[in-house]
Image (cartoon, rainbow, N blue to C red; front, side):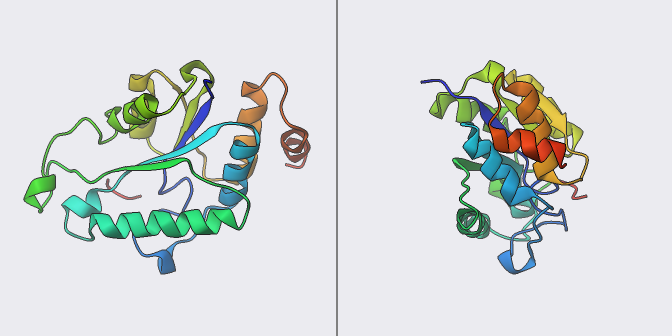
Length: 187
């Protein structure tokens, strides 16, 4: 059965972009981020993260650090009754110091490779799906993959996503409606 999906950028959308984030002890969630993921889950959407992680290519940290951070984020989200269905990250950068990651690839946003990989693995209703990003490269990747995209304004992510879920759903869940009424890294 096809399902809609929300594709989240990570740094600057789910967590504050403090520059090359990989240490869970230094993560600061964006206000309303965990609640936003739960709202997406509760509305029946798949929840994905697609994030450029050029810090790997630059030698600042390794792939295992990113995986560990994503596992930590998953545990944190569980305490809110929320989950991410899949985390995708691109370790490449054409100017990287680590040779095996110094490539032009199709997964690094603005290229759509990470989104397309998820579309191949999951039964996503493309027409009912959208991306939330904080950079033009996020929006460009979504457009290249054929999905809508919205530039996150840095406010409360739960409020931001609540409005979008209301607009996209013909019959939004009551918690979204009630919430609506209340309502820098060089990668």
